[in-house]
Image (cartoon, rainbow over all chains, first blue to last red; front, side, top):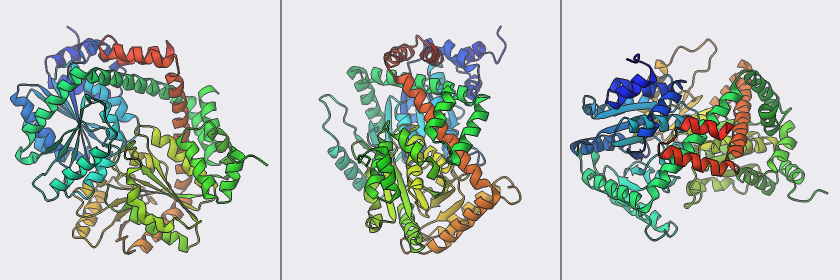
Length: 317
Length: 317
């Protein structure tokens, strides 16, 4: 029998649904373990089956509540559900947003649900590197649906969209700038809009604003997907049935149009590039490169050298 | 005489404060022009003088209002002020947040002020690549203060903190999760906290929450900077004098403690690495690498290959 902790043993235990094995595999990702290579080689043939749904939106719109409601809905269909919650790194508050996900603890004892928070490590590139690999692990372990929840508005969300088969953009009325936030770069990535907290004043205005923005979008091709707008009040479960139906429609459209396959290939392309770049970055950062970089940085900071020449020297010098 | 448009001519016109020359130089950055190499080489000896202040916080907290108020305050001191407003990319809404900055147009005809929005291009790495170079251009052109304003909560902000000498984290009461947002990874990067819209209910609670979080932080060294909390109501100008004072105190501390120099070297290091990585990424993406990548991505998407082996083949194969 293989020793516990070896990639083979972990992968086979995870395939049987052992949550501790899954947790350890994802920790390998977070720690950038050299064993990951073996893990990824072992699981590659079993990947490509999970439906991946990204959830994004500004803080406070109710992403965690919607995630929890979707988990419940898929569990009643007997589907196994994985959740990856991406937190901006917070070294000293330590997983700052976990408290916000306490409501998801109702699923904590359900063997068909696996929930994991991942820190994005505070540097660009961290997210693009780690989340796809965690996703790959849940996919290979046989989860039917993987929900990826991210906080914030900006680059991280665009990165998430490149991972997901379907991206939900969630807004809420009365959140100051919910629609402004939706405008800012995430409009293009939305497959489905959710106006959550629909019982609050301003919900209809938010829907109208989104419709107006969608109307301004360039003409789409015949047969293109038109992002629907779903009203929900996730805390009471209202609108979640509708949302699940829209998600199914989008999944069918992805399969029929060939867009699903295109997205999966694009995702793999991003993933390979991120790994290749990480590998090159690692080579650059290795000693004596590290000392060399420090020296070049000092020269650039004092104006003796420009950063392009410094980059050239770092790569080729 | 050098032809207009040549790097030499542009750099010398920008140095004289010509806003069109500045705009063209920054467009070279946005377009990733090959002429940038010459520009950066020419301006290197003149860089390293500007004070760089980053402003960050969730949408709607009043970043633009505070930026505008700081511009006015510094202008009364006869300082030249540059503003870089970083927008998440939005291809079809085209600079979505510019409307939000209309109030800054009072400075549009002031030759001592230069304001520029930059899109972050929607991919990780875009921000880390372009903003430092725009900053470098404004620095070399003799701006005394450069304000970098970013939207959102998450990775982009952490990247901004690595650019700025001083980072302001702005929150507002009644913004749903203002303090939650502040918690999420940006607490560590704040040199000064601003609780804006201090006339609204909840301002004192926001201050108390921030104090409580700061108290939970690990013990700082003797002589370390303790982030102050400034209350402001930027629309009426209240608190801006206090904020300017705190900024000056932080600038003095940076100079005396050596932390300013350390931050500038760290910034240069990030900049060199980003350029080196961009260069390597470009090489990877070049044909026939592009066709190779597409082929590898197809194999990874179908589970025939794992992404690590694909990355190896891409780099070394």
